[in-house]
Image 1: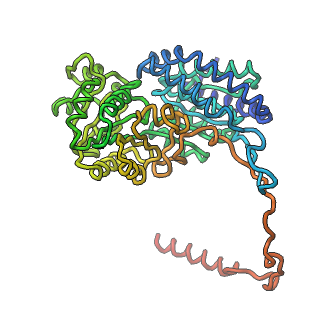
Image 2: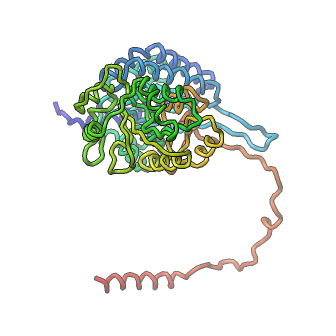
Image 3: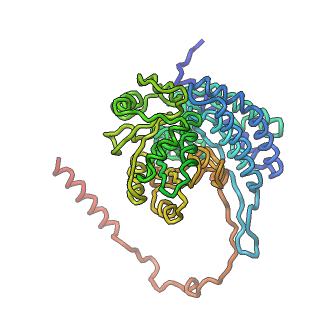
Length: 490
């Protein structure tokens, strides 16, 4: 019997699943709103009930993060996301009337190729499945190679619930044979209508290069500015808690603190009481060499690990209660690796005298790997808050909240999602938190609201047969001259 290599098996699986999803989606496209909502509610409930088991599987398989925190993210994806979209109309007329002159009709995209990361391996799957099915799409999940088992377990829970509630078989699929050629095949397949990619910069670039509509969302380099007007106790608690949450695997996690100089010493002490350990310069150098390769790439062995583990990896001894490692920095860019995004329990620390200087430092950090993503500000001075909100090239500005939970919409009124766009300046098609609205098209039935101008009915005064631009003979002469010029240059 012929044995196919992994790439060929992956390509074949992608083709089969894309076709299955397409055939099922043709049926699902005719579902009523009641049917859609019944299926999605069953999926959300099943995922919520399995949140603890799936979170534990994700932590065990990937080696990233905290099982209890992954459970919380799974519950957020199942409950909060569903609550935010359950009443949104996605079938038939969604708004408008003949009296208003326009009627808008929801129309599904088709088959969605959904790439999911290892850092949020199960919660992102839950999130994307709910959004896709609610918008009457088929979906094929292509998980990160290090998260195949937990992603498939998540899909099985929700797929079984969907079918039991009336969804057609084949609507929801998850690849098990993962390879780059197979994932490319899924994204470029003729049945794929949209790519929904969450992950690293390289993967997002590949998603955007397939000649298909794509929502690609990648890394952030989120600064947290703490103003002299801030509630310092709250800021310290939130920053340390947010950075240590699931060991910094959410892309909206704070990466550097920018402290207003008059309150910097007090903030430092308060953060230390919350479990922050400020390293000295020799220890900071050890962290630079541990977290990053010479080319700037992150060392995967450090990703999503506890502060104690990272410290041990770097040869640093820290107190048992340490939750976050903090390094004092004075520059931003390739020459300072710790000013990069750090998907682990390490924070940069800068001091700036006044909000204007803090603003400039935050702009530097955002420009160095976080354009379009997020920023956190702790302040009570509304003038400072608005200055940061108006001037920063990011699409989520969290005020007096945790970056991790605030920017995904758990503790703010931002639309709940684990897929966070970074807009055009960040190389993405949207700066929104991607939700169900992004996964369907809108047809518009437009009634005439004003009469056309009389000029639109007038006969042309130009003689019939008039040709604008060069004649065919002139075009041929131009082409001959260009060809001759090329020959002469050779």
